[in-house]
Image (cartoon, rainbow, N blue to C red; front, top):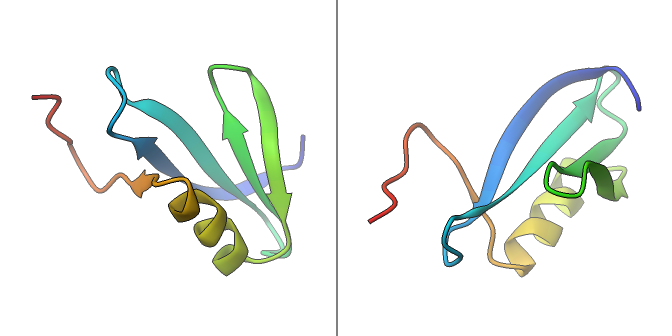
Length: 71
């Protein structure tokens, strides 16, 4: 696995409990990994942030910003 500079947490909030994926950026900003903590593996890699966001939103994942309600 690469060294990563930052991460974002994305969830499928239609599932209960929500299904979590983590978007990781490498230090150069030229590679973006989508990590599935449930499977403990990278499920997708792309060379741009826009492609990573498209891949996540296409499957109806939402970026977590702060706390989300489970109700």
